[in-house]
Length: 323
Image (cartoon, rainbow, N blue to C red; front, side):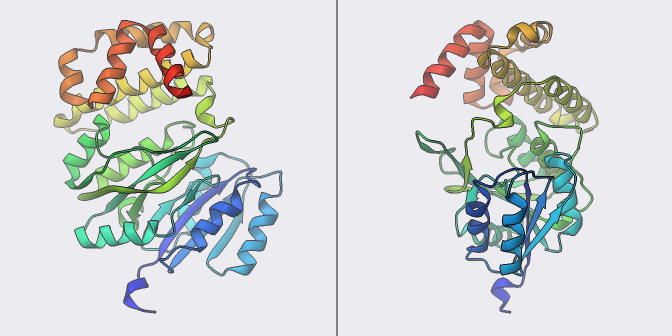
């Protein structure tokens, strides 16, 4: 095999009842311009035809590994995938999404050119109404502290795992927290950043296509979401880097605003009134100075509107969603 393809990339794909989407997802992986790729499909106890489809595809392409486990959630599926991954680089793809044919070639090229530990691209949202690229053009190489600051402030480095390629050495000793249902990407990404020395970001093109589904976990609210925020606070307290303290506080405020907005938009405020009131108090007491210093302009605007009127925020959100 030529030097061009000497570095194996392992791509971990957790799946559960995605028979409508899985062929498109896997096809986008098998058709990558970067050929030295290992595709690890983790069936988290599907009850539809997903497993049958994956088995057939695995028989047709030696690069596909199909594993089945009892249902335990996306984090446990990803952890199993990490155990089986043999590549020097690791990527993650969600089973109802798909990627551009050059995504992993581009990410690996950026890693090697910049001697980075993590590379990140951009993604586009796909639903029945539109295709929307997430960010404007960014091309940056960041050291560890810069990358973590940009991650926490929401400026340059995204939460999403699926738009990243990791050196295996950076995440070799990491595991996804299986008690976290929403936000598992953020915690894992933060841990990986803490293990890294350099991160490269290039959002010139959207290489990952996120398919918006009406039954997505992001559209539902449960008690687990509150537990997740508590876990996040605990994890942040473990990070003993004084110069990041204010950024960690800002990130936590952002996550609480996100939770409040999801509850209000879902019309379930009456079920979580106590926690909503507490979070809104914290948001209102969060200083404008800290907002300006430690958050992006977009998040400053979001939090300011939430401070003024949660109802106005909800109304504006619904208006912009319809456009």
